[in-house]
Length: 188
Image (cartoon, rainbow, N blue to C red; front, side, top):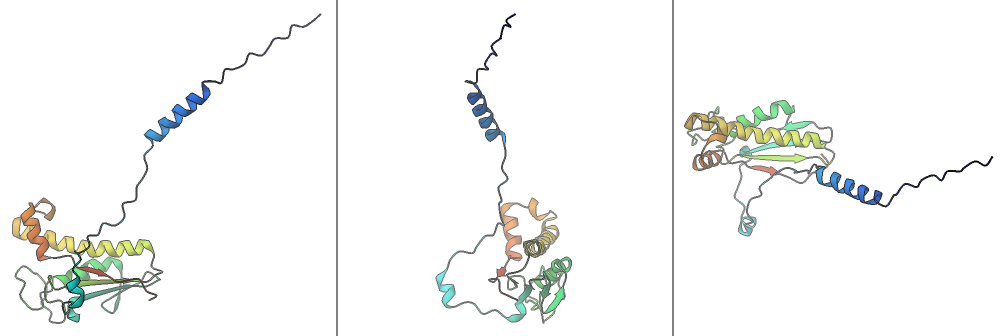
């Protein structure tokens, strides 16, 4: 008896490439990619004449923050924790040392900043500072400015800072100008 060998039917693979291509396009179109936005920082306008004759800055108007490679903070020549940095910065910025600030709530220490307009926060990191600590320090310093602006907006306009109109917000920003000077990282 001869056995009837059946031929195995072939699968038509001609359209497989088309299907794979359509799946590839589908996944490329529907997949979302996370984009790192970075830290938004607005740089001051370039003014060459300021480089020739920089304005004098009194040492008492500088709030110095140093971060070493072990992620330790040295604030105004004393060790501090990141959790305390916001309050220390607020006290410095809102001090009103010369008494010319009528909206400041500070203690008016003659050893600290004269007014928010003259106060400058100086930040310097070590090359070995972790990115997490760097961001945490930046956040705390910016949060100090934001809280002072919010408190002033509440006192003057009865609203939060982010609820103010354009002109009112500009006045509050001018009252507490954000001046954070960041020096090139060193080996501290």
